[in-house]
Length: 363
Image 1 (cartoon, rainbow, N blue to C red):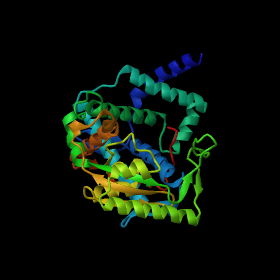
Image 2 (spheres, rainbow, N blue to C red; image 1 turned 90 degrees about the horizontal axis):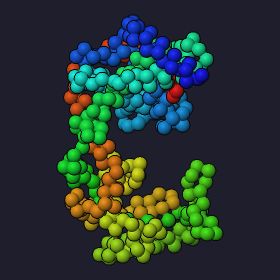
Image 3 (tube, rainbow, N blue to C red; image 1 turned 60 degrees about the vertical axis):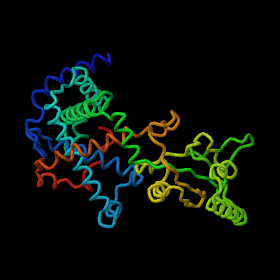
């Protein structure tokens, strides 16, 4: 019965909304006849507001957060709004490219969109209730469907260009060039200089409720012993000692699975941390640097980057995100070239305040 009700709702949505979607919508951005509606801007501002607050401020919406400087001359508010504006410009261009490339949305995709909306209506209890909920975002059901279709067109353009077998998907030649120009090779020795990893009686790591390995803080005497070890290792490698042998003997993390070192790019902050990435970009080959925090010390050596065509399968596994990085660069360059010709209704856009719009983590 539920499936039948949803199907009927989908059919009703398809007929009624094809007729009236966008009839009274204001245009906030346009490019060569392709128009991004006010509701598209409202939707993404509310959605990205929710996402940014979740990831950068524990979901807390406050003036203090928006006023915080993210750089010497830019607040979080300015950064997020600029980011949203750029994203919407790209999406406006994508609407034009969708037609330019003669792409279409399949009947299955339209039905999927309508089924999603129908399910939301059923969950809310009525069209009136979901329209009440959407009104907080400055939208209604018709506008939501229009936004979902615009999003699907954007996804279709992205897949056409950069998906598997895409028109501008990365080639192996581009991977080699990107690797040679953007990656660095590091080896390092890890010493737990401020805390040890907690293990149980079987030698297995003990994890806390957040899934992190629990730590046992060292005493001042234990820290002094570790610091003496670090000083000895650093002196040895700087005097020309075999770094690989020092890794085997002194590293408290086993790196035997990475005999050729780690391949680090400037995009890899989340994987290696900012201090290690900074060392990768700043050190000269064979230079040594020590990086520490309150718990651990890394003795880092920068090595010559192996040629791409010599990499083993295990080494290439470290480059699992290289296509993502290449696409990001190509995508940005391509779409930036179009955005200079976008027409923006600044008065309408400026009427939206990131602090005042409601958050959207559901629609």
